[in-house]
Length: 107
Image 1 (cartoon, rainbow, N blue to C red):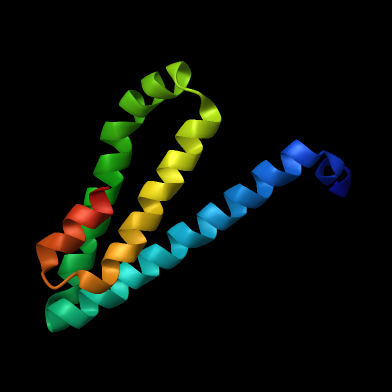
Image 2 (cartoon, rainbow, N blue to C red; image 1 turned 180 degrees about the vertical axis):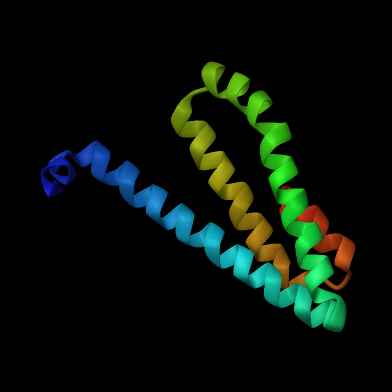
């Protein structure tokens, strides 16, 4: 099973995917904690709305992103999307309103 990791290209892609998934998971946890901090007792409703927006964005954006992914260079697209996610993570400390959580989670 670990033989596949001997392939350098696959190993790099696999490691990048693991890092991206860990980052996405941590961002979701951070948004949950931020929602609790900003909304207090209403944090459940805020987080539920935020995660619903996230799923709606996945469903709505996926077909459009797939069309672009077929035409654009894969590496450039993956790197640029990871940079967008990094910018969203860097914006988290500056969130002061609940609507900003909704905007960040949509991106």
